[in-house]
Image (cartoon, rainbow, N blue to C red; front, side, top):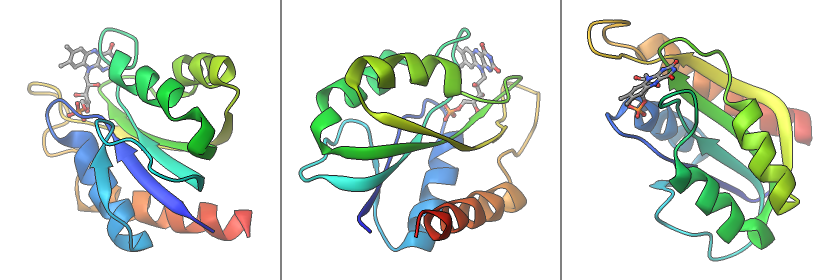
Length: 138
Ligand SMILES: Cc1cc2nc3c(=O)[nH]c(=O)nc-3n(C[C@H](O)[C@H](O)[C@H](O)COP(=O)(O)O)c2cc1C
């Protein structure tokens, strides 16, 4: 099963998860600036909330790479939200790309809140999540 990891980050929180997932799966974690050169079965896509939405760069990435995405599995961080499913689902539907309900989302440091998050436990949990998702997909 072919896999890729892409992420968007502003302060590095989501990159921590992306790196942990990519290391576990034996692939490279790249930012959404880097398009998919070939089709992948599963795209682990990392994004966070900024003013109650995901960044436009994430949406643009999905639309620009829709022919090369089998299905999207989300991971990410935020200060308060528990999932980025809703805003991403809107774009995924527009692109005609499948978005799985399996998602990893944890707290990310925001000013003085959630200091140090994601931490080692979060990173391990994200990597475990990704490995289990792939197992469940066969
Ligand atoms: C400009 C800005 C707006 C934010 N808005 C939200 C928000 O609406 N909801 C939320 O839960 N977190 C919000 N956050 C917190 C981020 O989602 C959180 O710090 C996240 O871990 C950042 O990830 P990153 O370092 O990968 O960019 C905001 C952060 C910034 C900088």
